[in-house]
Image (cartoon, rainbow, N blue to C red):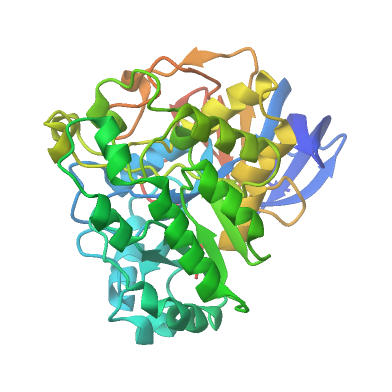
Length: 427
């Protein structure tokens, strides 16, 4: 046994005073008393599984003035996230096996946390899906235009799903129908215009297309960043192979409040009304939502400080997601079992990694949190290169310590590892 960790551990839906035994980066024992030569006793602090973020845009390569894999993974680590899955809308787009190889080789030298990658599915590379699956953890399809996305023709969905199903990998969907978006497109002067230009009917239409195309299919489909109450309601009819995610910004923010400066809250799909926000949060609490995903998509302050119509869409979130929700769990606004499911175990299941639970055989990825250690989120204390957050001054509980594969990555809010500690989790 290389390491033992003691504290109030989240095991089987409750907290128990116990010890975790670790060998070769894996959990090998959970007992009342264990003591390796390397032993950490965290007294009555909580020990919980580290989070898995299945949806980040670390902007690497090609857009590294906004973020790169080192700064993005650093932010993830400080936010209690042990593993991230990076989207393919970079420069160049990740569409073939050689570009996947390039990313893996680059990020293994940069990343602080473990990581996986998605391959974009385009109208021109469906024949390469099985080949690409050897180096990716899943696929991404964009049904609506957004930052650097390659639009996918919805008429090709069934063919793509049939091919993807042979790989056993999940396919993640940006669900906004492009024809619907074109019909509503306008010159946007403010955040309400952005909402009008991407109404919930576009999300509903795309989800119906996905439901129809995946009917009687074994394809594992995940609908990303569901933003409207109508879409969440529609997805109650999904089959067992389909999951969906919600972001903190869609479930905690609404345009009914004064979102200022407005360009910093411009995202796709848009932040909607209080009714949508409350409906989504209710769906998180009642078990309808499968995962919380950050959709971490940073832009610089200069890029956001322009006329609304010209501002890019997206906001950071990988570092604040777990701390925001952990605070809500402390306040009993969300239960700890729900939080552990949507942020840890269920995401790990979707992307097929042995993480997200404190159980024998799982990676020794966990965080240590002191419920007394409440903080206000401050941009200057965060680690994303973009240097801002939509949740400025919100209350949060950041982890004091973070372990990944049994290695202490964060200790007392200080980084303990360097570039290249993170590993590609394999295809």
